[in-house]
View 1: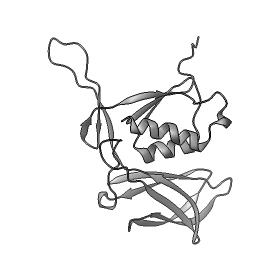
View 2 (view 1 turned 60 degrees about the vertical axis):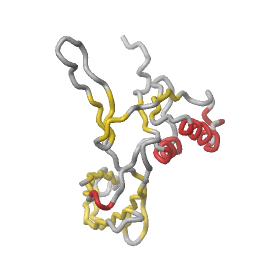
View 3 (view 1 turned 90 degrees about the vertical axis):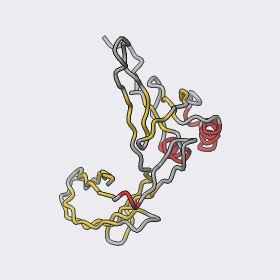
View 4 (view 1 turned 120 degrees about the vertical axis):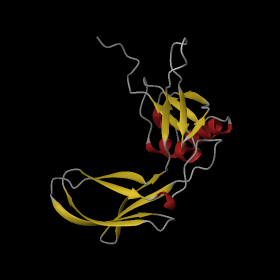
Length: 184
């Protein structure tokens, strides 16, 4: 069973609404009445049989599902999501060896990660078109990369970046912004 949290905002009004949630290209849907506050979180339970697992580049397919939110027969929002589990495994080594292992287990399968760093492609972000970003990310995919580390001394990329990496099977290791700064 997958748990998906959806945050809805009702502004300053407290009102009751009926929402329909639909997972496109499946038969799963959910209907509920919600009292919306400034920010309300709804947890949806989606059974495993409705979705296929998302896999990193080179390990399988990357099915994405559009989760649609409907109120009064009008779509009010949607988001593409993939279903996967990601674990960082740190086991103690045997007696006499200091340290721990460090590897990833994706969807219960131990996996070798092939990665690189992502820095902003241009100092002036308005010069980076979606087409240029796609070209760079597809190049990473074709090189076999399945994870990018996003440098913390830069910016948060726009939504197109995150949507494209999901589509291409590239996981992200995201530094906190300004993580390279010296704080006193």
